[in-house]
Image 1 (cartoon, rainbow, N blue to C red):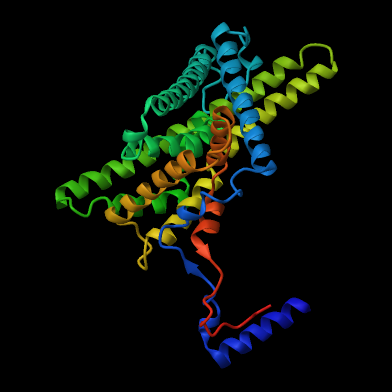
Image 2 (image 1 turned 60 degrees about the vertical axis):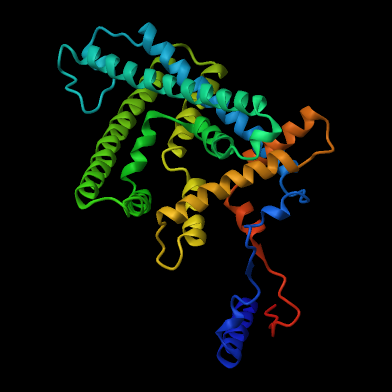
Length: 349
C-alpha cells in the first residue's frame, strides 16, 4: 500500500510539474567516471575478495572437470562389450561401430576443451609478461596492452571459470544473435554492397554452423555425465560416491551456466545504451570509443590505484579490482546523482 501511495504521488507531480522530474537528478560524467576511480575504495573490499575467491574456485573446478574428462576418455575407461551397456543420443546405438564413434566424439570434444583452456591460460600469461616488461613511458600510449589487460581480467578469466564446447550454442540464442547482428551491420558502414553481402553471409553461416556444433557438444557432454554416473555406481555405495556424483554434476551445471554469460549480456546492453546513441546501434566510431574507454579503465586502475601499498600487495589489489569490475561499477562511476544547486529539483522520496 505504501508503494502505491508513493508512486501515485510521483505520478501526480509529473503531471503537474512536468515529466522532467524523472531523470533530472541524473548527470553523466563526461569522462565516464574514470576520474573518480583514483580516490575510490569501492573497487577493493571483502565482497570483491570473496568474488575473486569464487572465481578461482570455479576456474579450478572447471579445469579439473575438463582435464579429468579428457583423461578418462583417452584411457578408454568406459569401454564396453555390449551395445546397450552405454548411453547414446543421436547415434545408431544398434550399430557395431556405435561404441567407437561415441568414444571418438567424446575425445574430440574433450581435446578441444583442453586446448582452448590452455590457449586462454597461455594468453593470460603472455599479457601478464607484457605488462611486467612495459616501461612507464611506453605504457601510457599502449592502447593494445591496456585493452588486453581489461579483456583478460574481465572476460578471459570468467570464460575459463565455466568454459566448455557447449559455449558456441549461445550463438543461436536470440538475445545474443540480435545485438551481434546489429554490431556486424555497424562495422559495414564503409564497405561496398558486395562486401556487405559477404559479411552478412559469413555472419549467418558462422552463427548457424557454430551453434549446431554447440548443440552437438551439449549432446556429447550430456552422454559423458550419464556414462560417468553409471560407471561410478557399479561399486558398492560409500560416501565418496555421493561426493563424486556432486562434483560431476556441479561441473556440468557450471559449464551450462557458461553457455550464455548473463554478466556479458548485461554489460553489452549498458554499453549499447551509453555509446549506441538514440538509434540503439553501435556505429564504428562509437565502438571505437567504447573499446578505448575500457582500455582507459584498466590503465587508471593499474597506474593510479593503491600507490601507497607495497608492490605485491598493490598488484594484488589492482588485479582483484579489475577482476570484479562489472557493468554495475561502470554505472556507479558514470552517473552523478547530485543535482546542481540551481536545479529546480523535486524530492520524490
